[in-house]
Image 1 (cartoon, rainbow, N blue to C red):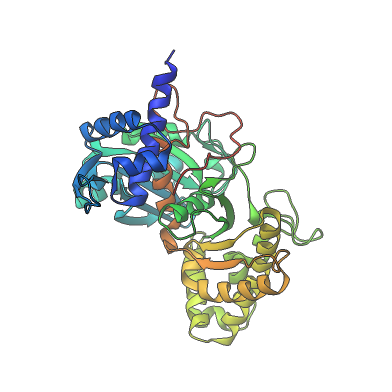
Image 2: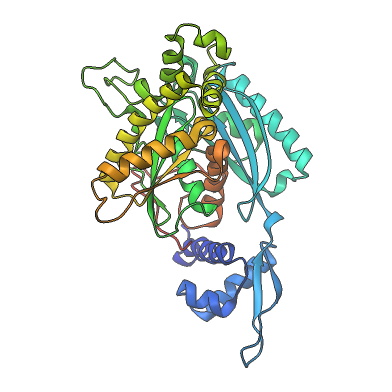
Amino acid sequence: MATATALARPRTHGIVLDLIRAARTISRVELVEASGLTGATITNVVRELLDDGLIEEAGRAESTGGKPRTLLRLRARARFTVGVQLDRCSCTIVIIDLAGQLVARTAMGGAGLRSPRETLIAVADHLDGLMATADVQRSLVLGIGLVSQGPQDLTSGRLLTGNPMGAWHGYPLLDELEAITGLPVLLDNDATAAAIGEFWIGGVEPASTYGCIYMASGIGGGVVSRGGVYRGGTSNSVEIGHVSLDIDGETCECGNRGCLEHYAGPEAVIAGAERVPGLSRRLGLTHGDTDTLVNFTRIARAAMAGDPEPLRLLHASARYVAHAAIGLASLFDLDAVVLAGQSFASAGSIYAEAMQTQLDRTGFARDVHPVQVLLSKSGADAAAIGGAVLVLRSELTPRDLRRPDGQSLRYTEPHPVRDLPITA
């Protein structure tokens, strides 16, 4: 069994690495002050991080009377992580560096086009090409963050949903992708990934509590407080797309009635467009099983150009999303709501304006503090970047636990409630 000192070592390394990342350049003395660790501990950790090639000295600070302090910074390209956002309609693959900066991205058709194994082989092939193009050595890649819709069993690495196809339900995603790529893999919810990715890239105030509404071909959500993700009992929390807005509404595949997705999701918007005589043909809407994002984007572009019927459809969708956001803000006392994902990337300004108006008028805590509606800095790539960030946090910061053998990034806690806060 590992000693207490051995178990504590990754945590201290993670704290120091995250402080250096956030500060960009920082001295050893400043690390002691910011971390609360002893000077001796900081000296040892910094030495080991220098030996590992994860950080480097970056000159000296201006003298304030004594000997100038040596500054430290990350060696950004010392390590890399991969994020894969897998949706029925699309798949985005990104590589980020140790500082969380985007190095390269590519995209391919979504999970609705192939069998699970064929999809994962295609992901691996695209990743190989991306690493070759970006000159990223496989030995420097810490792992892959695979993010998709829920519900999920993060311990076994399986989706517990038949979306996009029945074959995906219970399929051993992580075992297969690890075997195909030879890299450790972490599975998580796409909306959760988008939410924490926003914190990492500086899209929100570090000390804030904010919600993320993620809309690709469906709608999901996540909540982050002071850098810690709210996860619930099994990390299947904040499924805002499956909150009922009408108890007598249509039955959803989740078993609930009148879910938000049925009124506000991209497929609901497309269905509305098809009910308008001549609009579907005029906008060039198609009817393939994986055409949801393409069709929604065509409607969004027309709405952004001032076309009245598409604009009416998006305003109707935005009202429902705003209603759900009010509930989310009231439950968690949010400071902000971030809109992320492919669908918001094409029509986010319309949704943001409508939602801000509604929250300003009817938000429960509006007289105590405003709730700001923000568009994600990562746009359409928010979930993929967030997936890569989750791997970076799992490996290099003291949030997420690895399997005891150290070979996989999948979660091992039987009941993870939330991540621990960390200095931004």
